[in-house]
Length: 189
Image (cartoon, one colour):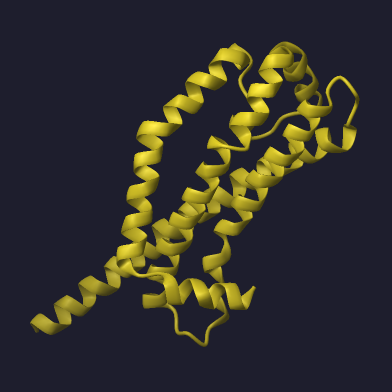
């Protein structure tokens, strides 16, 4: 893990963080609405497990029944196209931005520099959720209790990892700006 962290620090420039943020913004504005429209076509008011923070594993059974065969197929296709691109984009943005800020704040010898890996928690949770919920949908109506339970476990991991990453980015950005302001004040004295 330390090697991955070091590589991220080497790659993460201000320009790359901005570029990844711009890519995420474009995806969110122009592609994500398509995902939402296509999801609404088969999921209706029931929604998808991805947007819930916590749910009982049995909700997948209810969703799979309600979606029907074509809805389950659409669910799987969307989760391995658009919903694969989204976690890649937001994770890349969070990792490069956080790494850039933390590189300015934390000495390279500090173990705290491993904080730049926190976005991986959300990414692993998201991919695990997609994998196990898709496996459940693909096997339906054949029971797959393991996929049902693991999907429900990976979903809050995704959300907690994502929220922790956002908070880390906000704090790192705040402390970076604070440090910058202090340095500018010292130079003006």
